[in-house]
Image (cartoon, rainbow, N blue to C red; front, side, top):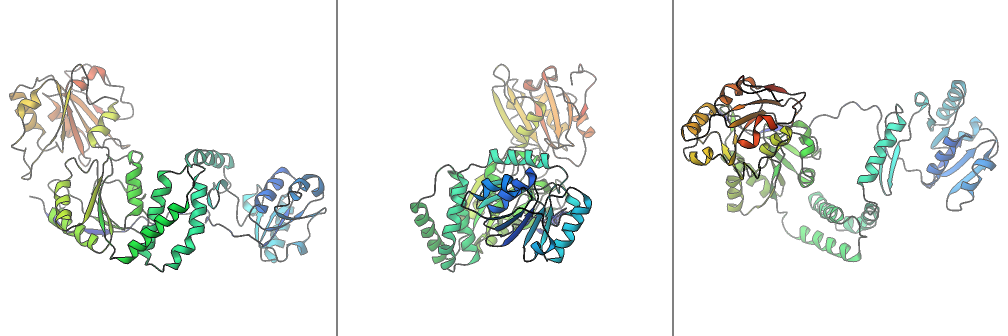
Length: 492
């Protein structure tokens, strides 16, 4: 009998140390000074001028290098064909220089600070108050990447990767957000209603980023805002699958749910790295269950889901794996429906899929495994469920996956063998599937119960049984803890 526990609010992880504080500096109409002659200075001039700053360039060769930029006509740039002086920096919000020596850099920094300006010395991080990052430009949507001056080429590579992920059409949606914001603010809706509006806006933009937003989008979204503002804020519950552990296996829909949540009720097995993906303002409440240990009663979780949703909250019930597989989803769905609370499911990759992927194996095989079944290793009383169809487990053409098998594996295998399961049927136990500390024990129906205790005891495990896992077809399992029975040929 598990010891009762209560839902426990937790704090999001604190922000780790930052080498620099990323800020976005408004320079439109402000006085900015650039001193230098090289290619780096020319690029910085174009970048600074693109912000709408009043740019003053000091360069003995200004006519040659900067003249094409000055002749564009759409930017404010003044050229001075001479070296800078301290007086030139007075009144500037930002001063940037290309320095050929430490002495020149130190002199420029001293003059810039005396003028009360923020200082940047190109390619000399030690002399910079602020640095330029690699930019992904979908203005007004801008992404900046910094390596604190340590590896600019690395930053550029990251920028290229992000460029490939962000459709250029998002620029149009970002501009629409800027243009439509005054109409949203004019409604004087509550913070919760405004956030709901922008969530609807975001869903629409991400669903079709390739097209331009239209007046019809504007009118429909403002109608949604009025509707949200007119009535009491209706909460909702989302049952979200966090996957088997690896944060990279989280679905995009699950990620969006986490970023829209007001409150997250999460299980013990959910990785901290996944919780870190939620919006920072979301409340986090641990409602985990521990096999044969302290656990939050399901009735308490149901009550909490309903009460929070009735407060108008978006509640994410975050479960490891898939919420519909041994996640008590039906009980939570029933509680919400009975209370009239909107509820939906965001499926996740279940542990069986994660474990099979780690093995580089298929759960089915057209020659030997045409069916698949998931079985829980214990019922409500902690023992093997009385309703297991043992003849189905003994079927040589089925793949069986046993969840939570640790305490009942021996009884399970003994009954399955007694009902006709071949003793040499391949069996693989996987603990902490998809995580760096994943461990695997490979054997047969006859000895897998003896091998399970060799796996780390604090890690969740699944047991996979069937001809699809015959050991001579397993892919090499490098960098993992593997236990092999003596009766089998070594193949991993």
